Image 1: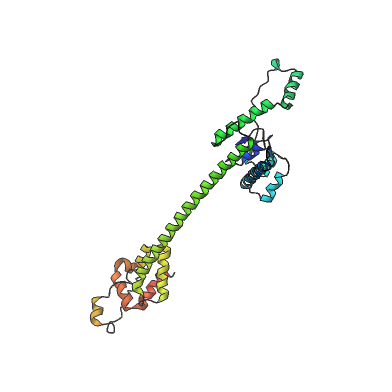
Image 2: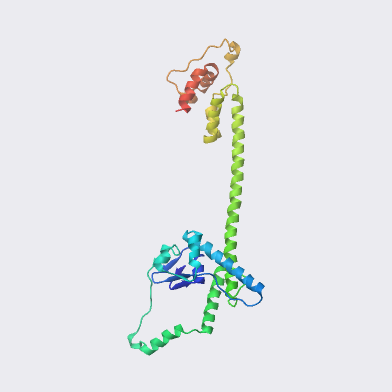
Length: 300
């Protein structure tokens, strides 16, 4: 949204709904409280006052959002009429950019107006003309209604009714976005909980056979591998640990089995690649050698 002249009152309110706010260097913004007039009973006056309070609150929240200022700072702008030139509006965060004005008017010297004519034109701009003002306001309201798709109002509706419809439109958009975000977050949290639960169940199943065979600290080390690197990494780390005993060990008996020495120059990876069964045998028959290979691999 670009301010080519002035954005006063409702014009300043509309700035809060724009994605980007631009103003010409000789432009102005004016902020004040929502105002209106009513006729009728005390109840009708109180109702109208409540609507004006709601409009002010919506305007305040919009200014806080686009400027990043505190509520206390923004409220100062609602004490009377407050004018901001382009530089001040940029400094306060009311606009995002200031651009040079572009004027595409050519004056033909041969047809230039006389001084009296020029003064008369200027005076006419200062003269209050109810019909002209009414037409301008209706045109502005029509454009506003069409741009934002406001419902329940027309160009003939009161200013208060149009502003109230605008407030409902902005509120519904904000509520819709928040509801969508909350729904997606709920789905994400549920999925995350489900995946974490399934992963824990798989890790527990893989480590269950090791209980009583390995000390608790080593089992927790394996658990950390599964939680940080995944089930596949844990299964690779457990290869050789959960392997079956060799037939020879059953024939000889545990007490009669001789300790198997680690192969000179072989590390964990070499065993896994070239002779995983030998690593299995180390795990069951030479725990010290197996533990040394394990520590060198996973505790660097």
